[in-house]
Image: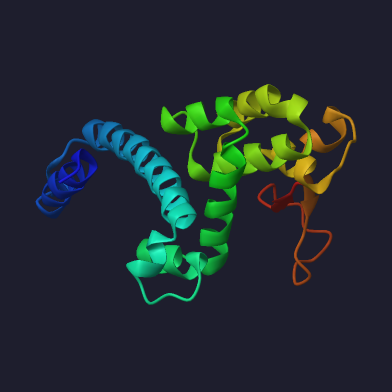
Amino acid sequence: MFEIERIAEDLSKVVAGMDPACLEGRDAARLTEVAAEGEKLFGAAKVLLAQRAVETRAWARSSRAATPEQWLAEASGCTEGAAREALATAQRLTSLPATAEQLRAGGLSVVQAAQVSAGATTDPTAEQRLLLTAKRSGASCREGARHRRGDRRGRGASARPTRAAPAHVDPGFRDPWFLLRTD
C-alpha cells in the first residue's frame, strides 16, 4: 500500500466520525482551512498521477472508459470537460517547473494551476507574475484568463471587473451585488 492510500483511508475514517456541531466555531473555521489545504494537495496528487496513468495507458487497463478524460471524470466524479482541463494542466506543468512546484507544495489549487499554466504557456515570461496574481486573488486569476485569450491590454484595463446585469434585471437597478464579469 502506498502512503497516499493510507492517508486517504485514515481521512475517510476521520470524516465519517466527524460531528461539526460539536466544534467551537473558531475550531470549525480553522479545520475548514486545514481541509482546504488537504483538498489542494490531494488535487495536485490526482492531476500528477493521472498524467502518469495517461502516459503509460494504464488507465485503459483499469477501466472500461473510452478515453482518458472519461476515465478521470468517472474516478473523480467530475465532468469530462473538467477532466480534460486537469489533464491539459498536468501536461502544461511539464514545461512550467515553478507552477508545478507551487501546486505540489499546496500553494496553488488545481484550478489556479490550470489558469496560471494556460497563461504562462501563451506567454512564458508571465509565469512568475501569474503565480503572484494567483496567490493574491485566489481562484479568480483574471490575468491568467486574459493571457489565455491572448488579450494584451494593459494590466489596469482588464484588472477591474465590469458590471453586467442579466437580461431580466431592470437596467436602472443599482444593487452593488450585480454579476461581475472580467471581460
